[in-house]
Image 1 (cartoon, rainbow, N blue to C red):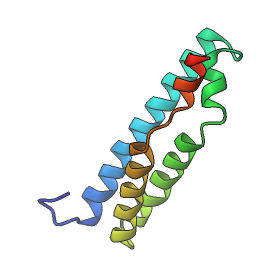
Image 2 (cartoon, rainbow, N blue to C red; image 1 turned 60 degrees about the vertical axis):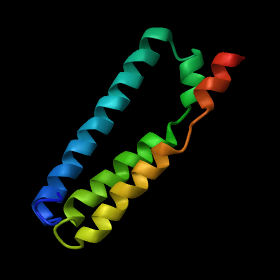
Image 3 (cartoon, one colour; image 1 turned 90 degrees about the vertical axis):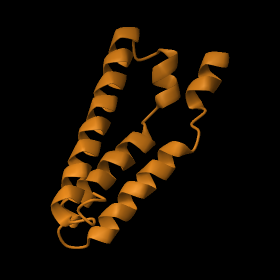
Length: 97
């Protein structure tokens, strides 16, 4: 994105890559929970996975938005990064129990 001066198409493509990563994360998480059961510690710790759902929603909104308001799309990408940068202690608490 930097060499293209934050043009719309590279920004949207970056959003697609981020969305595919989020889908891979949710798929892996679902597969692990399916192997361990719905009553596993991971399933209890993850719960409804609000961070994962919000991340995918922001990516889905940001991709088409890149062609109309590119700076808002970038702000959504940064927001998701900040959300995931903050520690999520749910899994640590459940494992410690």
